[in-house]
Length: 418
Image 1: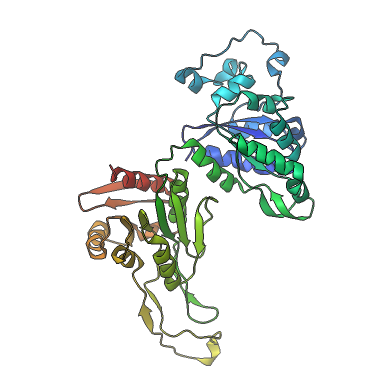
Image 2: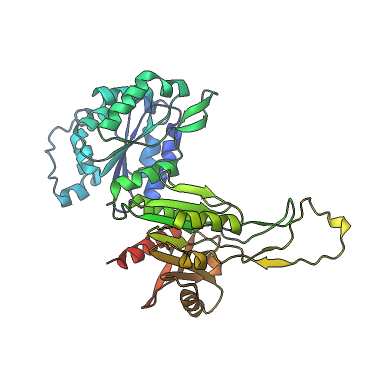
């Protein structure tokens, strides 16, 4: 999601600073080039060397670091497209980095953790260190991830400062609710690194899907037998979750109908958690009416138990047991034939052999617009491959991480609009 993007991470002073190291690693893993700026308070919790090691670049801490290095001869860089790409590369270029150069280099700025003190400085325009001075010359999107005691977050001064920053077009991620470092419980935790990254993505991407309503189902279903046992499969919902996050990053209004164990997504995704196939069907029908797109990635159980046992069945009470199963409804086929059908319906098919042939049969039989066929071995894996199949053509998609598979599928969907 961040390939080729330059992200400046401003690190405030708070115990949550150690989670920012996870955020930096995540952004780099997703393709970003990351530089870090630390306040003096942040350096009391984690040393700059930590972020040097993570990014492979020098972490900036001083407003006047050029003077401290005895290098005042460096001129202002040429901020052409090529100049921006090369900014900060190599020792000599690194010596040229001041607050203006850092601001011009970045495609976006993330400030985490943002303390109550730092929010006050930003709201009142105080520029007494490198990070706050950068904010005065910054012209790129800014995402702030606050972290503080819940009473500090709920205070009138913090609320006023947040409102002021909102009016200036600054975006926020969190805070989350939970147990705080002080031992109290409430709103004030730093958002999870994955959530911060997901909230950052839309600030760096053209909103090509703005105004579109997408409905995606994902994960397995659980079909209960007794109060303990159930029928399910190895699906994890990972690809569906990546599709939901990537589509929302491009501006789509996304509803995710999530089976058990489906990973978390961006806060922008409206999530409905379900267990059984019947629950998933009900949620899909209600959400998909009139939608732009429905994507059926869920590995819905083909069968459920004909008879549900209320209590736990004791193994010792029965030596031999016969089980009767009933077919579950075909959710994708039902959505494709419903009144006020979504404009497009995309199906998924996990096959163990003759993948394309089986998928083409399902394409016709289910009445869908396209189908992504893959191998059952991809279930539970972090990567996958397959075939994108429409009535007109079949395209192979080589093995990629599931994040990339999701982005590739979305590109295929958008290509079909043209």
